[in-house]
Image (tube, rainbow, N blue to C red; front, side, top):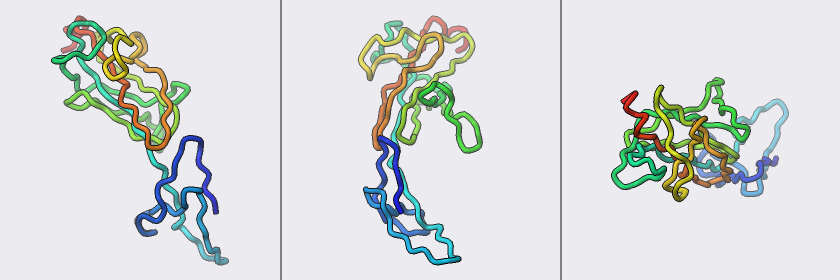
Length: 177
């Protein structure tokens, strides 16, 4: 039997557990030997894919320069939605949009299959985004000031992109904080 992987996907190491713990069976080439016995099922052959990570930070841009500066505080409780390469919400197995909230440190993260993704930040009524693309990839705001969505990024197995940030404009915050 051979498992095929999509471009950018890497299988996890083979046989790192037992069949009861849902270990991954194939080697790096995706092949696994299986003995088939008539009338007997085998529910122990499976494969794991090395995930990718996507995320980062939402902060209050107190000086309005579009860059994360020392002393500018994180913003907790902002909803962040995971979008596919077409900009549509990624759905979980129950058909719900995959979202998360920024934590007390303003951080968020998604663990995903390799692929192309973007995120969309949803702000409370009256809030606004600061200007985008004003600093380095690690320090700028990536949220489109109108839609709240970022450009898409492509992630391979094991990759981590922790640069999709959103800065909130201070002048708009007085309405909701």
